[in-house]
Amino acid sequence: MSVDTRARLIDAAAETFSKNGYHKTRMEDIANRAGVAKGTIYYNFENKAALFAELIITGINMIRDQVNKEISENSGAVAQLEGLIKNSLLICLKYDRVAMVLFNETDSGIDKQAEVLINRARENFFCLIHSKVSAGIASNEFRNMDSVILTGALMGLIGGTLISYLETDEQERPSHKILINTVTEVFLKGIIKVG
Image (cartoon, rainbow, N blue to C red; front, side, top):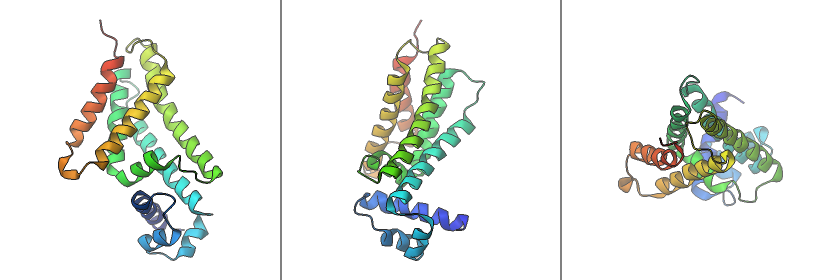
């Protein structure tokens, strides 16, 4: 399959899963959206669960890669975590259909093999966040708190806030800058070591 066809399938899957949810989406819907024959999807993906898993993995890996690319290893833990929050939200906003699927559908009773792949991709993203949180605790920039709990709290804050934001009517949403600043402040003001 060409890279262009693969990108069209992933994009069509993101839009269709976002609109219909996992269980109501049919492979025919995705094929129609992508402008390909249904067999093209099955040639490249074993079933709907495999396509869904690929969509989630692609989304998480895209966030991880962009965050890694844009966060300077030379900056302090606070700056790195700020960059991680900002870039995670910006990428999720840019690919909002994938983000909606990622944060809304990963526990929808999909195929076990796909669930394993999705959980592995989510674990990689968790590890990225955890490494920044742990570095901040080790450098004494953050309070000495449980790094795993802090990482889970940040993932929940990003995901929950993003879903709430995307489900709000576009005309009533604050700017992306306000969203990013609010999430960053809510999280970091609670873990930055004072005095």
